[in-house]
Image 1: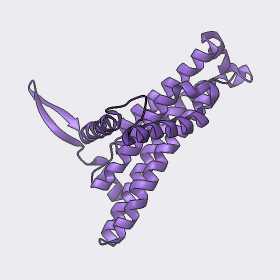
Image 2: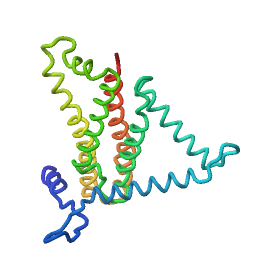
Image 3: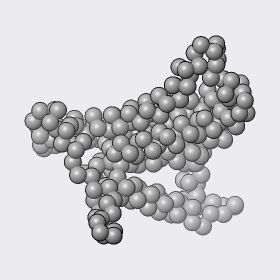
Image 4: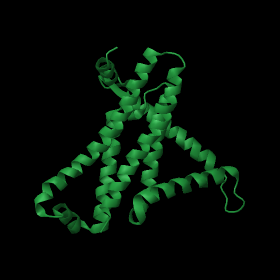
Length: 230
């Protein structure tokens, strides 16, 4: 099959999963929304299991696992954000876990929520909002506005344009990589339908999916770190 045609089929396929009667028509819910619900429920159950029965003294194995996970992610995101930006580590951790888990949905033979441009765009807009909020919170409104004229006033339009480019870059990088991995896996399944796709799935659905989650939060953390610098 032609790669362009395959890509067109993936991008233009019907993404609606649930049709709910609404007025004279239907209220449609996309696959990405439904799978996001499942991801949220799955993560919520993991949290409940690991945090049930927590105590100050003589913690159990589940509590120790929960504390290790939290400490690991806080240390990792804290190093990316720096001292001034580490107060935003909880947001970064949440986005990292969500994207990583969503990308693993492909292991179940389903389309990851991150294959929906609406999802990656929403994540990017939330990230850029936090980035600019962090800059305003650190520098104050006047100093934040003046920062657009740095290092000289002539570059002000470019600095303003960069604010719009950042979320677009984050969005398209994540979306493009997930789409690319999906296309490659479909081509492999058509060429070698047995055994080989399973091996490549371990890379594209696990390793590459987690890498893309890390890249997204790494860039967001880098932008936040830059925003809170004096």
